[in-house]
Image 1 (cartoon, rainbow, N blue to C red):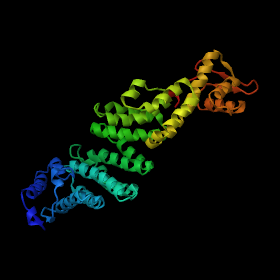
Image 2 (cartoon, rainbow, N blue to C red; image 1 turned 90 degrees about the horizontal axis):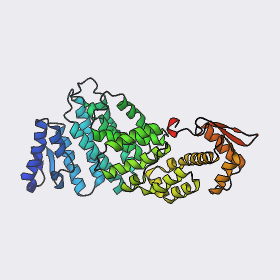
Image 3 (cartoon, rainbow, N blue to C red; image 1 turned 45 degrees about the vertical axis):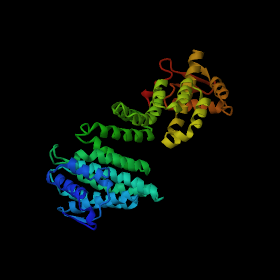
Length: 396
């Protein structure tokens, strides 16, 4: 069943390992085989000095490459481990594609592709190589498995390989987000959205999927779509997964703020996101000065999380709230432009003159933040008597 370079290795441990390989295959037990093929299995913590494994092809080579991968990990040689794991995925993909009307290998697929991604990160980091290079290799291999699963459209739902699509897509999202290739996500999203089983995947996969799709929508300023996806991810994320719920909120909070929904202080405190506290207060009050200060104060955190530019866009909402307060104080539908200029100057925008103030107001009217028009002759803004300041979620 196996051959070893070291007679001392031929004992209960190695025999148990190889028997586990054989039993999983003979029983068509994908979960059992997937467990023993994981780099986290107890067997992987031992060094196995073997030449080959006597199983039916291609599982003889797949299992051999897996053992070599585990051996390399024990030596902390993640570059070699990644190479062996890449071969495991390549061989599996070729084999999986030949198995018609059968999806027993989906649990195995899930394990080996997730560990491929993990080893890609480790190899890129450990060797001082650009991680993007490893993730590009990962993405290519993942696309190979994805084509096998997506192409299995004629098989019955019970045995179709399409049940593996979302797991693969979520890993591809991770690769594309890390390598800044978000445009490659679009066809993957289209595949899931057109699928008749999109709502039948595991809740864990759906939470991850909606998290990444929501982030993509946010970067594209499609805040309603982002709100829908990120809200789903947050609401369905396991309540004890505080770390994951916090990660979702980092993007959901600025999205909701962009739609005019401000988070409560209790929420920010519960998930240790007090970086948003002063920003929320500034937007509510229409205080552009403190908003700028609050963003800059925690700019490192916001840049790291990729939301700095989204928060910058809250400035127009802050100005909208400021102008609304002036409108409410004046209690008039005809407002002097000079009133808005004075408010801007008072809040630190001292260089803003009357002409620039008119420009700001004109842009806000054009974008739908204010319903009204400017009278340049009288230096006034005339606002609608019905809804001078529409709710943000009605036009954003």
